[in-house]
Length: 153
Ligand SMILES: [Zn+2]
Image (cartoon, rainbow, N blue to C red):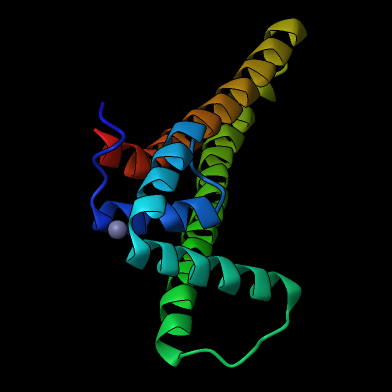
């Protein structure tokens, strides 16, 4: 990996990642190097840092419209993805829970089965549901971080 060979386009993506706090220290380091030697990316970085700061402080000063558009488009995309993920999680939980509920009716409520077996299957089922959702979420998160990582290859 050569961290010194960032293009300006790569730097733009990393600037967004840095502002969102999603970069590794290596990525931050390479971005810093690029910014030190590239004045247009440095300006871009300073502008977006300022926008971020002012958004957090809620001190909205008049700034060129196009920068706000770009900044908010980026922020909204992130919010949308996060919201999308919450809906996916809820949907999955509902569907799997329904399947589980049907199973409970047929098997677990059957009093001819030993109580310990029924309790064991219940706990096992809950564990599988939680693990499945957690693994899926981790996969999606890792893919998101790969977006930045691939730049440095
Ligand atoms: Zn540059």
